[in-house]
Length: 379
Ligand code: ADP
Ligand code: MG
Picture 1 (cartoon, rainbow, N blue to C red):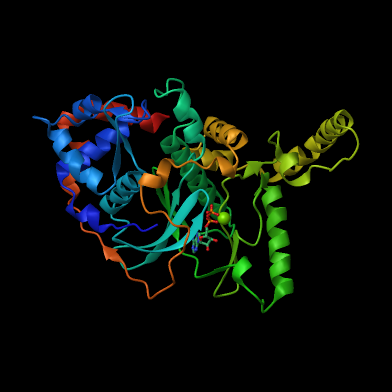
Picture 2: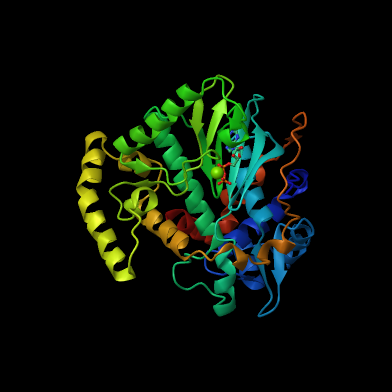
């Protein structure tokens, strides 16, 4: 996938306003009725429609007229809104090559105004579960836990909150710099994931460090849940850096045992289920005791705005997420998404210069939208 940020530079104030209006409409609609976009954008004389053309051309929105005339944001459209916010905040000045790609994320090198190179992770949750819902209902009445914008935003917030809290507790994680929508801005680790490293200078040191990390996490009541060579990086100074904790749970959490420590039992199903439950009961006090010693990170997490309810919604998603072969074609029309990571060439960054006064959320005529946005923030 390529993020051609050049588009950003040429979007007009009104085009951004329409893009933002589409995003706001998506709070309650999978496909936002054209009139609603028009109303939220508050542009006169069919202004929304006119501006929509450019957005469609750049694939920032998608037109859907199967049930009614409407639009939805594409991944790219959502990416641009988040990137623009970070540009406006003075944190990002350019986007470079893609350095990572996962089933539910894309990672890009970005550069700050001072020339500092950082990593921007774009979460893409709910790509799969979206379609299942799509066929059943269009209007997401019940708190849109299947809304990909919402899910991706929660995933990003969770990663940011954990990264920040872990960093504050001295864990070797990237520096959490900022979070907006589905994006997390963090420091770039100058190194490689362990999976790419053929030989370590000091394997015993690395081993010990890694084992200690698991213990220290447990002392804080945490289990990574995806602790492996893909999510541990080694930097130029041979330091181990832990990344990517979308499934991190507290050990006092009801499922903690299943993730890392569930005993495997043979025998008939009922029996093994019973044993599992017994084991859970046996282990829980131990976990809670360990967790109790150092205290959980709950407070720090809450400080970043990540709540227990947010965690529950994410868990629900993880539990109900369809298998990979349910992968839908929803995004096919969005962008030319390939699973290739671009060759590490000499980093080149697309400079971004965007007029900050073009931010529609600061203007009056967008008051309806403002309310909707506030609702969005609260969720
Ligand atoms: P995913 O959820 O897709 O697994 P990760 O956070 O594990 O996402 O990142 C995927 C890859 O991107 C990593 O294996 C690593 O190569 C690269 N990466 C992620 N974060 C950083 C970072 N802060 N600095 C450098 N590379 C990174
Ligand atoms: Mg990973």
